Image (cartoon, rainbow, N blue to C red):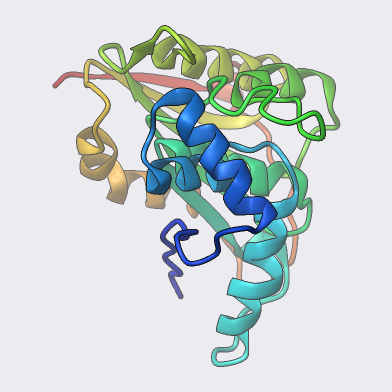
Length: 229
């Protein structure tokens, strides 16, 4: 298995560019640092731009050095906090890029909602998009805690993750929702990581290039577990 890790970009050396102006506006509007605003611009924006960056630049560069499989069936993506929203954006906007999804304390909230007229959606729209859009060939593990963030500007993280789980259940996705008592930290997700990986890849067959996913027939509404911290 080849794992590719990315960090958010730094726009400090590109003043005068459209992206710099947008990031500066977001930083000033919400009293955030430029680095934090850049991270949000990349990860929280619901558009195809970041997904294309990963596929056409990052993975293309890795693929030039290593023998990567081309089929989505053998790819998965994961993210924590805002990167969880970015992972879901990439999975949703680029249909042929990955079959597996793991999110920790996902920021499925309105951080970039209506920041631009071109991209009026926000992370809070994902449960509705799951319900209304075509079903994807994907298996998903979500993790959050009941003491995660409640932000007066952007929403309630535990409630947002519960909405996500309910949408996946309604559409009969093969998913697992691990809901504990944790705060906005990666402790629970990290502790469960071996279990998450085994669950996600449990029936992977290197001879296949695609697979239809459905909930375990013993758990037709998906699998929801509790976890104490």
